[in-house]
Image (cartoon, rainbow, N blue to C red):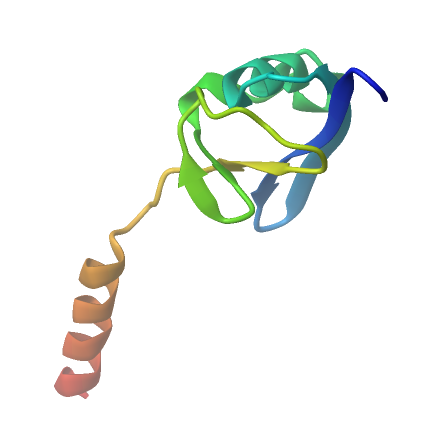
Length: 96
């Protein structure tokens, strides 16, 4: 595509992955790409506005301009803080 770029938008849960490839104009932002992906059938059941975003594992804001072949990732909120989870496991092991 001469005047645009192709990107992938992806969201994953433990048992399912949603993904789509979209063509967007050069200069498009992460937020614009997420909005386009949200209109795709496979993303219809998700509220994409609730997720933090990143590109290739690096968290970024919606105003970041995408590059050719970027993978935009939608991140679910953490259920448990990692420090708290480690503390609980350590306590459980100490109690045994």
